[in-house]
Amino acid sequence: MNTAIVVGRITKDIEVKMTNTGKAVTGFSVAVRMGRDITEFVPCRAYGKTAELLSTYCHKGSQIGVKGYIHTYKTDNGWRTEVIADEITFLGSKEDKEEQTSQQTSQEPIIEIDNDDLPF
Image (cartoon, rainbow, N blue to C red; front, side):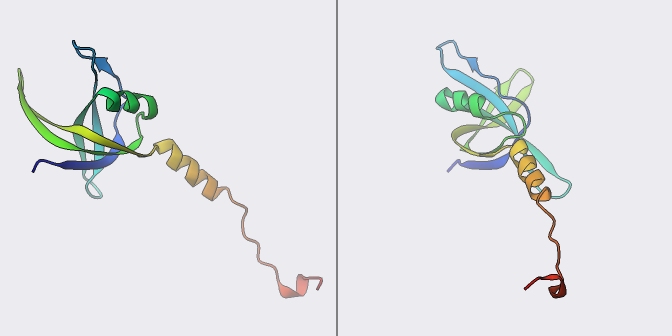
């Protein structure tokens, strides 16, 4: 069984290229927090409609889940391992998180009122 599941944030904007056969392809990296001081950068690749959807809806900082398989191949500079995406789950973006945080902090402050101040 060769299955990989990665959840993290995209490290740079998605750029789609076309293969010689006209199929969309994109390579991207997902930053995964492994602990307080450890972050892994997992190289991924997506093809076809998945690549196109990624470039349309995701950008640097978007949080995604990637389900796929691990593929290792030889290059001129040695060996490379990456996750080939079968499924992508859009989980949100960094801006969504910042907007949610700013909305939470900008709420009206709670004011305590003494019962003696009430007119009834």
